[in-house]
Length: 180
Image (cartoon, rainbow, N blue to C red; front, side, top):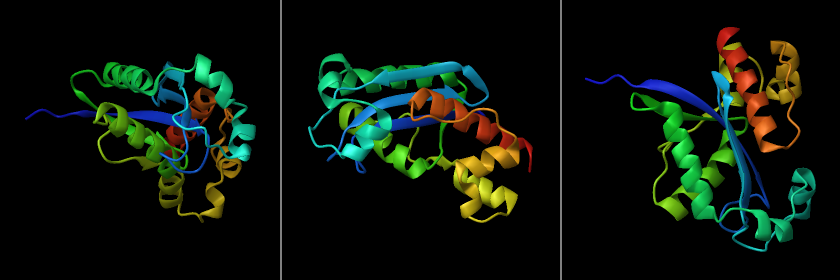
């Protein structure tokens, strides 16, 4: 029987709005939680011109610019899948880790299935906020990133750049796993 090592991969995305399909996945940032020097990032062409101005303001991204500079979604998801495969090798299984994983997961899962008809992460995601709430025995309010950073002594802070956010949330997850 083969035993698969769980490889935690921190993923963050920026989008043009709140739900996949009607809005676009615009950027992906990811890193291996226990090897944060192993990184992935890309920009994607929008699949719709629909956008929430607040989402674009937060990310600083432009649908018009991404139409010319972003990868076609199928290319982006192929590259992401290849990178995930490199992180896990033949004896690992990828675990999607996110800070507010339900949001990021919904877009990543939608795009993998829409453009590749498969998702290397399978059907689940691990939410750092929920993990911390359970392991620390704290309130949901105490799972805000600013409060977690202070409580855990984290050095990195997110800035809505998906790679920087993936690195910051990977640090939070590493600390949460070791400071129980």
